[in-house]
Image 1 (cartoon, rainbow, N blue to C red):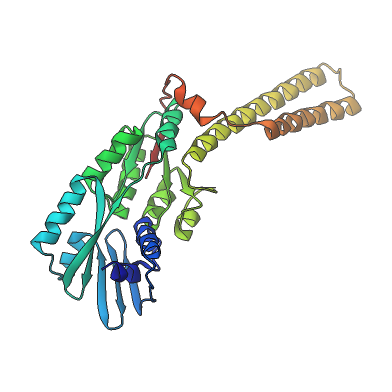
Image 2 (image 1 turned 60 degrees about the vertical axis):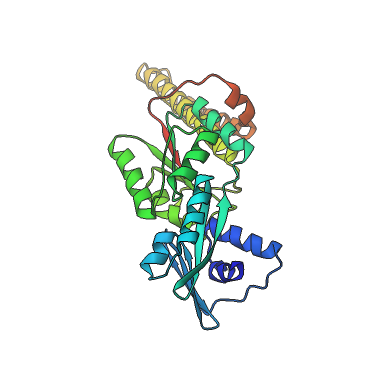
Length: 304
């Protein structure tokens, strides 16, 4: 059963597929290339190899393809879901032959990153996922998000982002897979986790982080705030220089040479001010997570 699942998932970039391939590698299984392979976005994959048709995905997906899912197999899938695990069913031909249960391993730094984002002024953090509600509930509780939506297809994630935008919210979407690409493209800021991200997601996003550690999102938000403050400060310096120059020029107190020096002095000040960003460093996420929360009413971060 695992060998069949691995054949079908061999060229899929979905995180669940990577888990299947890791398990097949641990079991030292030889996984041949599929003769044919097709991704059904948000549902599963179909493949053929050696004359056998293989379908891997959600129970609904198998049933739509006319596969028989025994009562025992359905009961086992339900039992795994009760334990907070994601299940993918495997069928050969028209018959379900087994399932793979995959548990989300929540990294200890994830909850810390969520708390730090809230303390940076992110008003509301939610989770959009294709997992079933029970799995999503277990993960949401562990990491401390404000709300979640589960069982979503890619277009439903996209609709959720659009809904938030229509409410006047600024939405940042963090994702990594093919299923996230439409939402990443639609969000005001699309952030993709580069190490685990698919090429499609990276292309759709505005920002690519070079690893899959959610704490890097905290660093990105911090540095963005620092850069924005510096931009505002530089504009302030420019306005002051120009205002003073206009007043002095109107009073006839500036010669052409002094006026040029005065103008260039403003440019040099802005450049030196911007250069200070080279020494800017984000605060440790652990320190931010331990601070008291203060909400900023204009920011909203959504991640998947």
